Image 1 (spheres, rainbow, N blue to C red):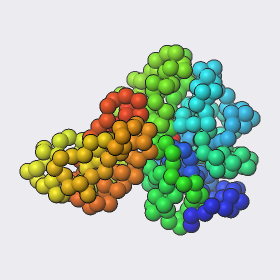
Image 2 (cartoon, rainbow, N blue to C red; image 1 turned 30 degrees about the vertical axis):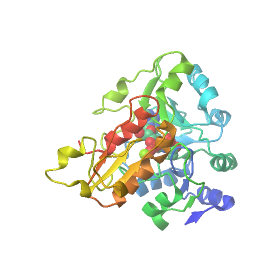
Image 3 (cartoon, rainbow, N blue to C red; image 1 turned 135 degrees about the horizontal axis):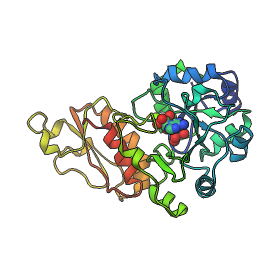
Image 4 (cartoon, rainbow, N blue to C red; image 1 turned 90 degrees about the horizontal axis):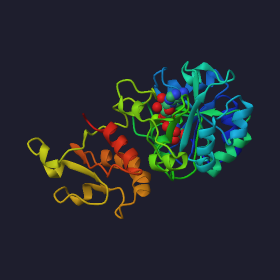
Length: 318
Ligand code: TXA
Ligand code: MG
């Protein structure tokens, strides 16, 4: 059921059930992080591999401190600039956090989402919530309450409707387990803005090595629509598929040959933030056109274009 009632939302979490929550990035599938049985329901509902740890969400750094989780200095600098917001900090774990949340790792990922309804809910709770994106493992992340409901229906406790997500891409994940902060996932906060505040480059080696990603959830094919999605030229597929059988996802320029009703542009004015906000809905929409293939074009490799391209590459057929 899609709900807007706040006290019902906190009751669902307090009784150990799953609640999909709105955030500024994507909807999350939340459970009481201190309740191992509730957290187990997340893995089950998403069909998520047990080795893939979850992000903890709460409304302030002070509360994380009371649960034994502290940020090192560089992380505090970023938090001062960007939190609440689309950044997740990987730091040493506290004993209060059940191993099922961190999949046995000695680190824990924490984040303060920038969404007023979500923050108000988190402030009411006596615990942090563990919340991965509210989609079945491997499929596109949800940016509306309806997306979540289409996938989970009545099989979870409820979906708290907080409107469409403003950022539209998952948080950027940075690890602080060594002297040089490591970028583990590109996301809704650009690499450039993080490096500007830190005054240093991040270590991005963990991103490139897809075979052994340091964020265990970053497997190379993810966000996969049912329709095969390709990133090369439409012309390369003409021996099998006509233009009339293609859907198209572009940044700001339409395709000259594919029927215009089968085209989705992420931002006609060429704005990265707008493109990010539209991306996952565009992949769903293109899929729902039920054409033979989807052709998508990459954006310039800068700003949020990097994270958008990362998601498109993971959605694509290799
Ligand atoms: O924006 C977001 O981050 C959304 C919203 C709901 O907050 N959440 C989200 O969660 O994207 P999820 O589970 O879909 O992705 C979390 C990623 C996974 O790739 C996971 O492997 C990684 O974070 N992760 C979690 N804990 C980690 C840890 N201790 N060390 C390294 N990576 C970790
Ligand atoms: Mg996810």
